Length: 367
Image (cartoon, rainbow, N blue to C red):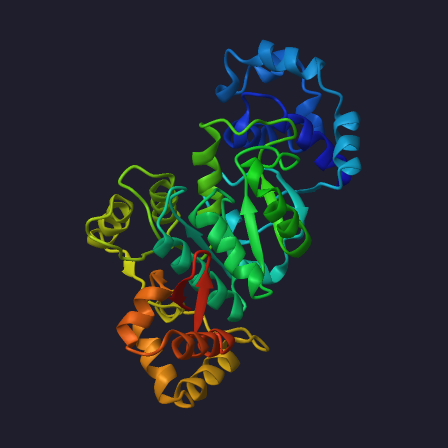
């Protein structure tokens, strides 16, 4: 198997091959090693390689398969093919599955219960909080969160799962030895430790714009369904959603402010028949998923109800004044009619009970 992966990696380094041509080579020659060593004249007989045989032979001369394999071993990057154990089972079902995945971390059997959460890089506070909350609650139910590690919604989704000790997998549009965006290095390192970072692109591949649609088909293809949280009308998140539809997977969307440009993509999906998401229950119901045995989902839900019942009158009144969008403490105190010290103590109590969260600048939001 290792020999097959060595030459599959070498084929994957040929700049113009891609999944379709590599599949044609494997079908014609039976193995990656035989395909790699095929004479130029025979390569030219393959319909998809007509006009490319000379170029393939030229690029092949510049690649040393064992040396490239050694680089992967030194960087502790695993290679997974559809014939390997550990290849995402759902990904095998799509048209043109990646012939090779590069993985840092590990794709586990449990990760086949995965949901993609995607959205805009430029997003609102509301969008980030929704993505984080949905990812965390899905993680509590034993669901793996798949996203693209972009800024904005993707980052919030990964963080939401990891904060609840859940699994999350990032799919990159570049080689896995790179970190894109560079500002997400800490998140990338945590994903490697507690989940996985995967890509179909070989080492040294830069994050070029044309790579991201290919990346998006893997995000949707490795997931049972795709949840779009915020997306403008022209968005990579919509590309992921339409790939999901082509792959016969479910598409779900979170409604937003009708005046926000970041909600237009989601509202378009809803008009086209996507499932409207107001809570994690909508996702679990649409995908026919139940919390995995031994997860925190049931315990968390049960623990929250008595907390609400046990609030005193002040805490109850203050909680009603804290929305799901940031509100400054001065506005809350003014609306409560209480003295600042008494209201502040009540807010602190609510924060300790996990019902509200304090943000920088003395803003508060419901959790």
